Length: 297
Image 1 (cartoon, one colour):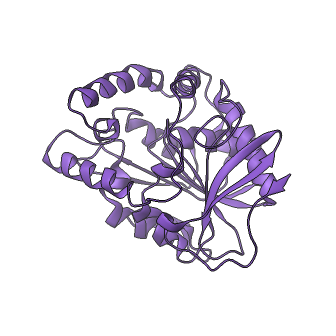
Image 2: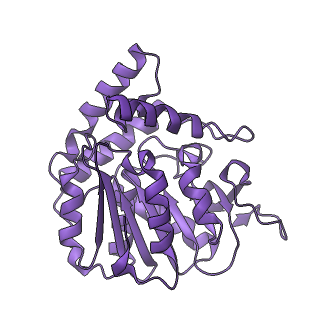
Image 3: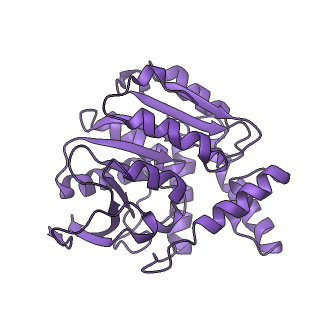
């Protein structure tokens, strides 16, 4: 194991300025960034399909990092990480566990979005003692109805974006009405706030492998989520075309004691469209002394 983190660095609370790091474990060099005050339980972020270190909304990460140690990372074969994207969500969860163990953490909080939420579910079911609090956004359970249709939806929206010279996330994450289009443009602009040491984009082959893994996940037998005892916050928009919004409610029903926030007139990226409301809710939820059953949207 080799860690390139320099000691005694000043605390950084802006994701645009978060230092780029690497750590080697299991023959893979993992690219990651960290910010916020170190000490205590870190919040590890699990990113979406085709997402890299550059795809996290600073309006969500920065407020969390004011008081928490935040870590984002690239899975093997994604962005600046070496290795290859595995063919299943289970293997992605195993890789995430390898990365977390390499950093020396035995307990973490998890913030996940979309594909990252699928990986997080497999991680917590296999290693229940690792995760203290769980945030699942824009995601669904293993075997969830219509998750396997994400491939067709994704390619269709990529085509629509190409025809209008837009970022595909504007179509995949947001409604194509006035509110959605405005939120989409603002979100894409926020992702460009970091100008130095940006990540490498995902390769077409890695992207296709991720899509195949999601389709397999959607066609698999459901996991037993009744075993999850972690305080869990679930959030989505009310019109998620990628991972149907009804699957967020299904997660809520299957994870005992979980909380559910559904934002109106929004899609897969509802948490980004409503970041001004969502961020205070998730900061409160992740607070160490918070009564998780009273989280307010």
